[in-house]
Length: 252
View 1: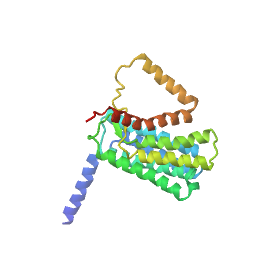
View 2: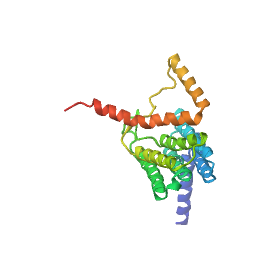
View 3: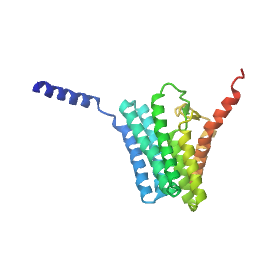
View 4: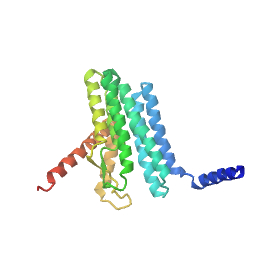
C-alpha cells in the first residue's frame, strides 16, 4: 500500500508538471491584479489619484492578457479562472473600497451599502459572464463590463481630484449615485458593444488612423476628463441601444 501511495503521489506530480500553465498571458493577469491591489493600498493612504490610475492600468493589462493568449494560442481554463479572480479584485473590490474611502464613508450606513451593491454587482457580473460564454452575442456584453464600471467610478474620483473639487455633501451623494448606477448596470441585460468584432489585421481607411491620433492627443491633453467622459458615454450607450431595439421591435 505504501508503494501504491508513493506511486500515486508521483503520478499526480507528473500530471501537474505535464499540464503546467502558460506564463506570458498570466504575467499580464498578474500585473492587472497587482495594479488593483496597489490601487487599494494607495486609497488606504489617501492617495486617490494614484489609486484611480492604478485601476486604469489594470484595465489596460486586463485587455492585453486575453489578446496575447489568443495571438499566441495559449488560452487555458486556468488562465480564464485566474483572469476572473483578478478582475474581481481590480474591478470589483478595488473601486468599491476606493470610493468608500474617498466619499462614501461620510454617508454612514448608506455609504457602505452602496459600496457593497457595487462589489456584489461586479461579482454577479463576472459569474454570469463565465457561465454565458458561447451563449450570448459576442458583439455585445450583457450588462456593463466590470472594467468599464470601475473606470466610471474611479474616473469620477480622478476628475474631482484633478479639478480640486471639495468633497462636500452634494459631491458625496453624486459619487454614491454613480457607484450605485455602475453596480446595478453591471447586472442588467442592457447590451454594451464589446468591440470584439474589430479586426486589427484588416486594412482600414485613412480617416480611421486620424481618429486614433486625435483620440490619443485628446487623452494626453487632459487624461482624467477625457477618459471619464468616454466611459460616461459608454456607460449610457447600453441603455440607448436597448431603447433603440425596443422601439424597432415589430408590433404584434
